Amino acid sequence: MCLSGQVKKALDFHDDLIAKGFQLDKVSYGILIDGLCKAGETRAALQLLRRIEALMVEPDVVMYSTVIHSLCKDKLVSEAFHLYSEMIARIFILMLSLAIIYYMAFVLCVNSKKLFVC
Image 1 (cartoon, rainbow, N blue to C red):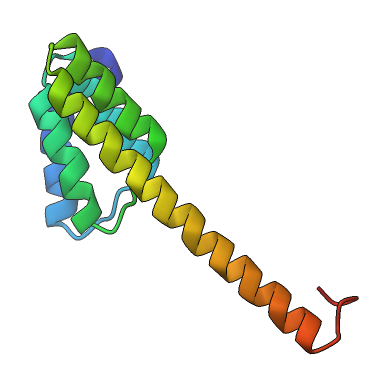
Image 2 (image 1 turned 90 degrees about the horizontal axis):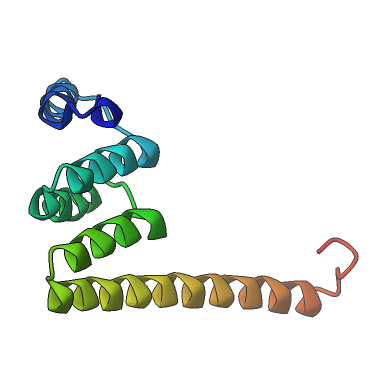
């Protein structure tokens, strides 16, 4: 629906699915965000980006980039920079968490002297 320009219809469909207890995935939200931005509804796309976190869907770089690009097109550069900074901070925290997990797994392997298993 979004890809054919029927963003309002797609949002209504989204709201109906959520009300019935269904969970959408990243791809679905990415398409909605892209459709909103292409329709000139940057504020709505930004609100949706914020809402999906509460629905336990982690926004990805593509979603952030789509909204950032749309904010820049709308000459909202300050908001675009703020969102970009938020995206970088989230990526940094994720990468740091992964690094800690890998380090702990490595230490456990070395300490247990089971390097051939790791």
